Image: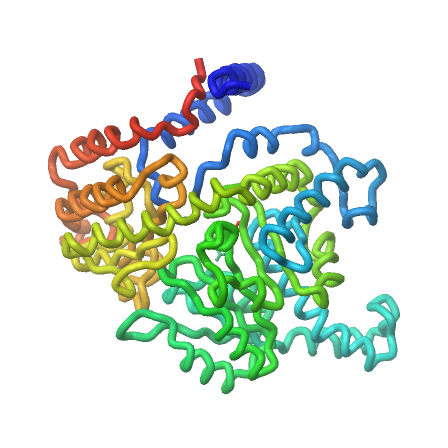
Amino acid sequence: MSEQSVNQSISSAYSQILDVIGGVEPRIAAATRQELEDQRGSLKLIASENYASPAVLLTMGTWFSDKYAEGTVGHRFYAGCQNVDTVESVAAEHARELFGAPYAYVQPHSGIDANLVAFWSILAHHVEGPWLQKFGAKNVNELSEEDWETLRTELGHQRLLGMSLDAGGHLTHGFRPNISGKMFHQNQYGTDPETGLLDYDAVRAKAREFQPLVLVAGYSAYPRRVNFAKMREIADEVGATLMVDMAHFAGLVAGRVFTGDEDPVPHAHIVTTTTHKSLRGPRGGMVLAQEEFAPDVDRGCPMVLGGPLSHMMAAKAVALAEARTQEFRDYAQRIADNAQSLADGFLKRGATLVTGGTDNHLVLLDVSSFGLTGRQAETALLDAGVVTNRNSVPADPNGAWYTSGIRFGTPALTTRGFGAEEFDRTAELVVEVLSNTQPGTTKAGEVSKASYVLGDGVADRVRSASAEMLDKHPLYPGLDLA
Ligand code: PLP
């Protein structure tokens, strides 16, 4: 099929689909159309977002959604799962091969769910297993009430060490208010106060002192690569399980930009990920594990997950098939090159970046030098059609709500075809907005952390400059919703 006829088919398929939806609930059809317009017309710089291919999008909308399939391949609690078995096996096979992982579990509905599966698997493997042996029980069904009490106490007293939120870690890496900070005794490592970089000696010292069962590596907002071989060395030294959450950079691992010590898969006991960020698949999660954890990971559903979403596993399989290609590897390299160009664009215009730059897919801009909070900067940028999210910087004086940072990521616009020059121009436009934004005042006449005043004409100027670039790189080219 020629590209033109593929585009025609997709356009007519989506137009008809939206007509069907509109016949039932017109507001949803209208919002779906509008979302495409909005995404097409803005600079999407949210580091955790991307644009999945039409093949991935179409795979999500099928009757696989109607099938219940609790359990695992060949071992289901429902009848009639033969096609779901195919879907799950193909997705897992692609995941194992793409990442070189001994075992892959593709059921998690999201990254947070994948982390929960990993936590419970580690607890079951290291705590439940040995205690069952001590009780002389084969499984939990054989435990007495007294045994249960002991097991609950043992499970509830384990320690987890992860990267702090303000250093770039995720909520689920032991942040106190999150369930991970409640189900474990938690402790956090940060980054060097001078350089903003991970200090492996400091992580080692903290691990020696804290003696965690789980050492979590990985991040949401740390703009640098991590040496996972070193993290494994630290974990081994204190007898911890190394869990790496590669939700953000899975695409860079799949695309062989992160190799050797920067590839978590050969070093970690368990790796979790999302499938929708730099990996460019459907929304969802996965767990990759060494064989010893496989039986416990396999119990993810119904232990902590609801029934598998078969349509999403099918879409994961399609996205993973795409990620095996040379085209995807080139894409992954461009993500990193473009982040470099964006960072250089900020630095040459005098902006301050956490860690002074980037070597992954994201850039963290400290907006305090513009006299703004992250919240003010985020909304002013949005007014100008630049979609980002505010983020804490290390030791953030404005806390996690207002923040002092804006996080930028290159995966989405790289998918649209943006190159180095366009990312440099993007940095220029961002600086133009922020330099022309002033903090507003509160009703009491004090400097506000939320309201702001954006200079006259700036938003329009930036929108039309962005439109020039966006028009050159249309989103879903050929998709025309007549
Ligand atoms: N892990 C990391 C490192 C993340 O950055 C995120 C999301 O931002 C998640 C997990 C959670 O992913 P999800 O939103 O799919 O649950």
